[in-house]
Image (cartoon, rainbow, N blue to C red; front, side, top):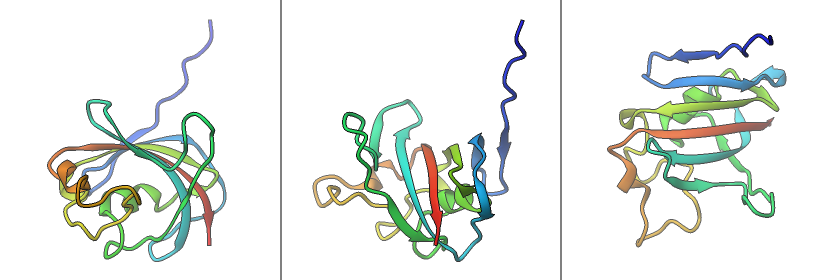
Length: 135
C-alpha cells in the first residue's frame, strides 16, 4: 500500500491558510520584490471568480506586481512571500486581508463598473497561485 502524500497546510499570522502544492526553485520572493504569477480565484464555496489562465486554451496572462500591501491584497502578498519560481500554493484568504479596497490588485481587466471585486469583500476567497518569476 502506498503512503499518502503529506498535506502541508499552515496558518499564517494574518489568518491566511495555505498549502504548498509544488516547491519551486531559486531565490524566495520577499516583501517588496516585483513578481510575475498566474492565479485562479474562487469563492470559498467553489464558485469561479477569475483566472489568469484560460481553462480551454491554456493561454495565460500573468500578473506582474510588487509584493507590497499598498498595491496588492495583503492575503495574496502573504501567500507569495517565501515562494520560489515554479512553486504553487493554494490558500484560503479571509475577508479582512482580501479585497477591502477597490484599488488593491489583482483586478482583472474585465472587472469594471458592472462587476466589482468588492462584491467579494465580505467572504473568504480561495487562490491557487503559481509563481513564475521573481524579477
